[in-house]
Length: 113
Image (cartoon, rainbow, N blue to C red; front, side, top):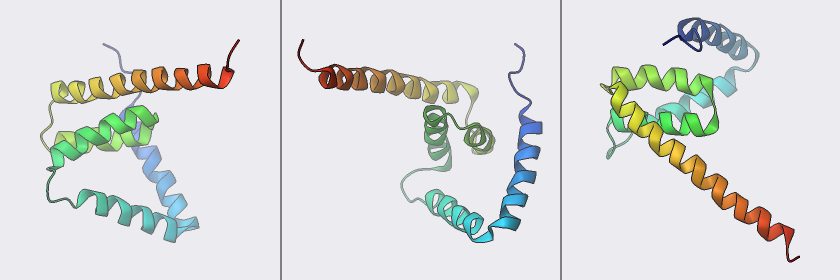
């Protein structure tokens, strides 16, 4: 299977842009770092579970940076590709569910004929 994206190159480029953003707005980057550390500080979820959730959210929000970061973290936490695929199944199901639910909103907004 061919690669869709060179994730190592993407990661290196994102890190360089992150450094540039930090130089321009260090308090923003500091705040984002604090938010990330806070979310990673849990007492009921282990790191692997958090990262599998993060991967599902990354897919639903269509965030390449999140996908890159959380695949790396999930692998580091011991998640297998099969476990990631099951988490992605949840994301896919929710996206379809959201489309179905919002389709009902469209019909409601269209009113009576």
